[in-house]
Image 1 (spheres, rainbow, N blue to C red):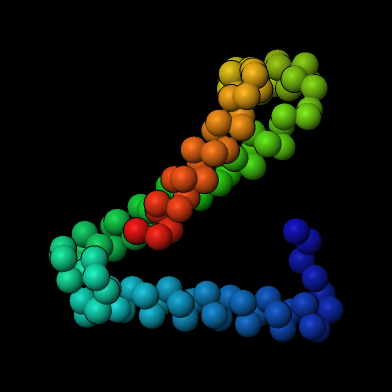
Image 2: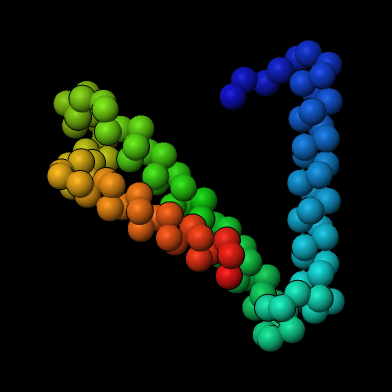
Length: 116
């Protein structure tokens, strides 16, 4: 995404960043004063690690999904030599209905991480 220089775009970006910071501070503060279910059940430090661990795990899975879906229509010979690991992975995921099965399993994992 390119950075915008128009005033409305800068305003939207600024508001978005401020709301993100506010949300992070609010959630971390609520965990710290034990106002969330998980911080009542376990120590708040463990709740912090669990929260950030789930977010990092979710971002990795989403990034992997975007990469696998994005590379599916690309001719594998274009990146066979330059990106050997990506080539090996897409050879497995693009056989048969493996990609569809991965996407279905990923969706279940996202629901479990987000709603538990």
